[in-house]
Amino acid sequence: MAKPTMMFGAALVAALLGSACKKEEAATSEPQPPPQAQPQAQAQPQGQAQPETKPEAPPPAPASPVLGKPAPDFTLEALDGSKVSLASFKGKVVVLEWFNPGCPYVQKSHTKGSLIDTARKHTDAGVVWLAINSGAAGKQGHDPAENTAAVKDWSLGHPVLRDVTGEIGKAYGATNTPNMFVIDAAGTVVYAGAIDNSPDGERGAPTGGTLVNYIDAALADLAAGRPVATPLTKPYGCGVKYAS
Amino acid sequence: MRRQVRVLIGAALAASLAGACKRSPSQDGGGGEHAEGAAVKGARVPLDPLPSGAVRVSGKNFHVDAAPAATCATAGGACSVLADLTALSGFKVNKEYPYRFVPDAASQALVEGDAAFAVTGTHTGRLVVPVRRDAPGASRVSGTFKLSVCNADVCQIEDAVLTVAMP
Image 1 (tube, rainbow over the protein chains, first blue to last red):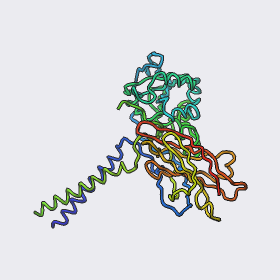
Image 2 (image 1 turned 135 degrees about the horizontal axis):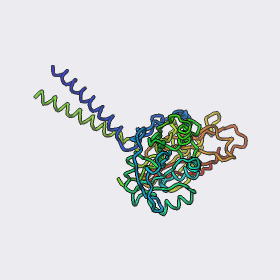
Image 3 (image 1 turned 30 degrees about the horizontal axis):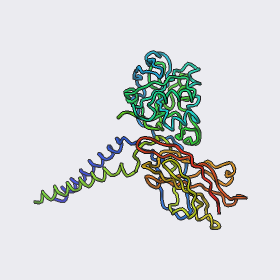
Image 4 (image 1 turned 60 degrees about the vertical axis):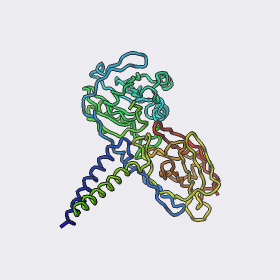
């Protein structure tokens, strides 16, 4: 009689802990690579390297707290001291770019990658483009002078806004630099994720072999009156340097 | 007494499973900053030590040792250049960076297809560049190993220029 009771108890404990384990792994703050990106070094006969198959599908994207919802409003200070409010762009399409000039992925994206000319191309067509730096004081890329230098060096024509408390970054669920959001003319967030599918930041290693600029694609969909076909992707780059 | 034994066994089982549960997330050796979304190439690579005479390229918080695989000296065997990345000073291999090898123009005919990369430890990874054995004038493979290492605060994206003499 004792054995079945024990076995049932053990099974119950194992099931409960197994479930708890899964939840803990999912909730870990460390981003985990997608399954197909998990390399496993395996012993092979000497010299028998087996080149892998390139992943065809983009990595799974985490959920976004704002996608499909009204864009959280904000008023932030630009590098020149002026105040910029999202509400002032009501009726316009707005792109938000999480920014950190000290992040090598941001540097690559603005000098070799998809951020070189994407902003100017779309702002010329009437889209509003705002870069937001949520780096806390003392963290990489926070220094206003460094941001001002980057604006000059990379010939940015749009403002860089300072979110020193990180409140706005967290409201949007911005995790990386760069991390992109597109807000439609009705004020709804219709895209959240990466700038493109080349996680080296320099358009040199697109997943599946063909480069896709997700912002170009989302804005083309909006211009054509279509729903955004790819509304959510997994951003890559540096972690946003929040205070905590 | 019997009930106490049952409780003890149950508690031991629970503690054991909880321990296993806690260990699993940290075993990846991740830690620190990651480049999300990148596709590290899932690869099977030979884990044998590099042959003697490897060339070392040193950079900030990393070095790369590169050499032709031992099989390159054997007729009929597969030939490749092996490049071992070691992250230094508390930095770790960025598991999500799309590591690759960009051959110089002079080496393009020698390199056969894409290089493969595998993380071999928290601080180490190996790049395998497949090399043609029958290319005329094959004497050395040179190009750029594009790599990334991170610590808890920052990531670096680096280019290591490699030149490896072939047997």
